Amino acid sequence: MDFEIHPGLYNYAVVVMLMMAGLYIVITRGNLVKKIVGLNVFQASVFVLYITMGKIIGGTAPILEDGFKVYSNPLPHVLILTAIVVGVATTALGLALVVRIREAYGTIEEDEIQRQDESR
Amino acid sequence: MAITVLAIIRLHNLVAVVMLSGFYSLLAATLFVVLDAVDVAFTEAAVGAGISTILLLGTLALTTQHEKIRALPRFPLVLVAVTGIALIYGTADMPAFGDPDSPIHEHVAPRYIHDSAEEIGLPNIVTSVLASYRGYDTLGEVTVIFTAGIGILTLLGIRRWRSRKPATGQSQGNGTGDAPGGDAT
Image 1 (tube, helix red, strand yellow):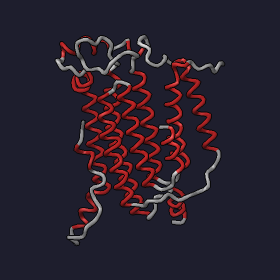
Image 2 (cartoon, chains in turn yellow, red):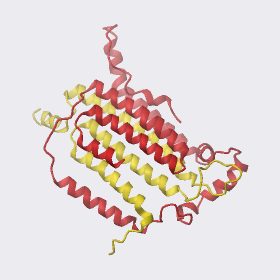
Image 3 (cartoon, chains in turn purple, red):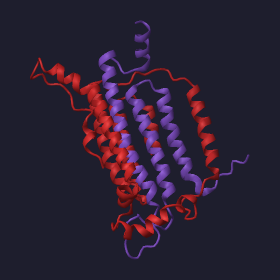
Image 4 (cartoon, chains in turn cyan, green):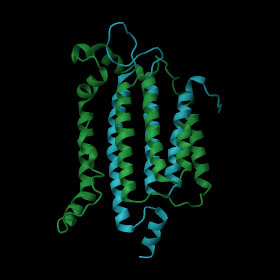
């Protein structure tokens, strides 16, 4: 097992760091709004992962034009375009749930909700 | 971006957290411009930094603005660190950044780049792929947004509408959730 990291792989290290930060927020923070922000951070790190994989050094944006031969891969762009919009839809649904939980319990802190459930 | 994320972890004022998450999206959008993904950058700036922030702020207006400060357990940090190290070890076999010979560039992408001008007739390859080659994906995406819109309406909309009926003129903070239903890109 060798942990020698190629210098061309630093983008993955950045993505993993952002991803783990988002995961850490989701695990440790009890506030539901902050959990959703953590999910968004996680999500954006996945977007960055895909877009960096599609990049070619010396390439240009995938819009056909005379004088350019090398284009970045358009397929990850399309997938992430879809993922961003779907991500906002899920975020909106999550936030609607948060608002509804607040109306039912009067709080958006996870441990207080659990305590109310147990004493019920 | 790393500094922004650390600030998001540390801060307890939720308004600041939401603003920083918008800033994080904006940084991601500029990164996408640098990485040649201009269409993605547009969408991320408009949807990620714009609409998400507005939705989060609307939720804060309906709930609370401060997170309860609580003692943090140590175990999740260890767990996350171990997961991160395992993932970085897993990326050691991945193709290097910007390598034109990596597997991702050798499957369908050359066909899109070479033939889409004749087959679709649009200069922007991303548009051709989105609307034509992978049109089913976009249809599915619209379905997801529609479902999410219905979910939000059942969670928030209908009950409010009923409760508003007897007491008209009572102003309340609605319209948080159902905004993204209309912006299917």
